[in-house]
Image 1 (cartoon, rainbow over the protein chains, first blue to last red):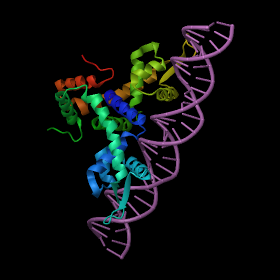
Image 2: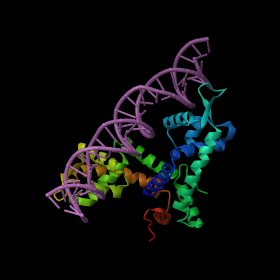
Image 3: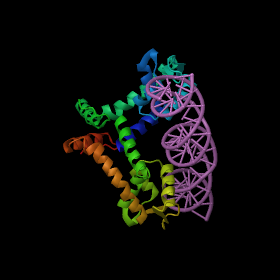
Image 4: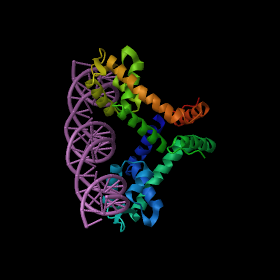
Length: 134
Length: 134
DNA sequence: TCCCTGTCGATGCAATTGCATCTATATGGA
DNA sequence: TCCATATAGATGCAATTGCATCGACAGGGA
């Protein structure tokens, strides 16, 4: 817990220092970028990014207000919507990654060998729910 | 990040289900219990529990309002105070631990062997700041 | 067709967090 | 002694989070 807190905190600090939005924005933009032009439904986002429903709802509102995503009505479900990343959103994601990726390599890559990193990933994977056994 | 989020979330859920306060309360009560009758100054607490200063200040106010800690003026520094855990605070800590400890064994102890747990602790220790090299 | 129940997403309200700043005291130097 | 600076801790205000609930639509059975 302590380690993950420290890592997140330092990464958030680096983002703030660069005048960039928080890590959660990266997560969402990343998933949406992966999803491509088809976009994603908010409920799909929810189980990918480990944020509560109301949190996703509000984060999407902020992303939309900043022009980073757009919401499209979905034809076969009147309740829903599809969220798609915009070019500006891709650009922001790229800038976030420049800082985020750098933080990861400094905080992790530089401290552990690749064997150790793999071992760490394997052990943590076993703690995931659902567990990843490999 | 994902794993630690899940672990914290599940542990918090277990605490809530038991009508208990959040994990941060445990951390502080734990440190104060370790510190014994001498208590701790708030600033000492801050670097032990990885909470921001204003966060500690407010958490202590809540703990005091609940009668779990008491604040004593400190003779040789008029700005400061000493925070000491009360019997009721020790009791609460005990009840928190019953749930917290159980969560740890279910979420970690049951999923990894003791060799793996030790390996995990060693790897994470290397990521700490300051790093623990052993 | 008409409910009943379930799912999608939004939101009012209270609690918490983050940020900046403030007050009060301490400490060291001119 | 007096002042400048530093440290301990609190707090006003805005943003975010958590909780509960709501409104809207979907889907299935009577």
